Length: 536
Image (tube, rainbow, N blue to C red):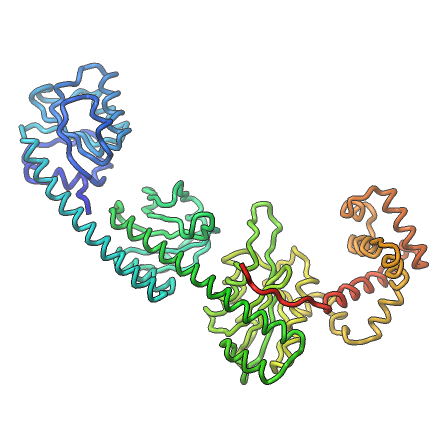
């Protein structure tokens, strides 16, 4: 680790020079990369930052303007400190203008009241700096070796963070792009102390580039992910100014975490293809002994188990919500299920993710659903629909269709952690009656004439009627949703009344028709399309 300004000043030669620190007391812990003796004012363009400039000041005038320009040029070049030997330019004291300028610029200013050989100081401190650089190179090589081994071993995120803590000795937190904690290692400190009010604290700390240090919090941070696909941030909670090896450590750890994520996505993609095929066959009620064996081969436990399906879609009810690919949501479901040791088949449908969970027969499903919902909402806000619990693999088509239908019946503003058949009211009742042919006859009796009219003439009056009924019979709201003028809407509603032979102003008629259009949507939904595979 490079020596700090404080450590440089404590070296034997400088410690014996009767030094006086006049400005920049709060910056004594800055690292020092090198020392430069310089007796010219325009030295700044030759410096690279984190140096200490040694001078007698013989080139400086008494002009406050010139002094301010000189100090500012050093500060802009990133100089860590300015050491001036008294005796040649100023006998006993440095001018107040110089002290004030250094204080304003955050530059450490030290006056030496005894003569010192600058060349000897450079040799002594330079030796320490070179030793520190060799140590950093050795440490960096060791860091790369450790994380290369973790790459080869396909280490989990918790193993990667443990390696960071062993090397740095301070807490580390992996968070999502939404500042939700994904994983952490507190390095032995109380968890409540490290993670208290994390979301607010994290949002207050911004990162301008891909890696940076926040002095106020002591956080050394780096973006996790590949450019264009950044998904998180790694935070090393340092107690001192980070060294070069700390920067190497967080960047190398972030690279290993990114590789783990890409490997997980690739693995998930292969799994998703297998899972999607199995889900398609299960939902189509094509059960056979071969299907049971294929489920077991996919690490989906089927013997002495119960099964429940969940369907999920992202909530996009805010302008600032970033729409995630279904593949990302599916990966989150897979990760959450693995974290709770729950075998799952996870696939993609047209606009949602569908999963079938295998649980022990004695498991209470609500605590598991609570845990899974909590994990998923760390990634994004989702609406979750849960099918009924079934006790045989050959009955899973019921829970799969349940979950899909419930999700389709659930409003986007739904705030419950998950929704079941009991939560969708009349839609739930109609779902239970979906196999009764009398319900289909009812739909045909109520809507048959309108459906035939639409089919013969290519109109969409049934859709218009559905929107009108969904808006509680409000013609103004229906016109707004359909982007129609009111006269056009009134004309089309009158046409519907004529075709069906009803009066839409009658609330009983509207209720009857509303039940019919809900049931029709249910029948349309049961004629499902196959589960899509993840080809992304």
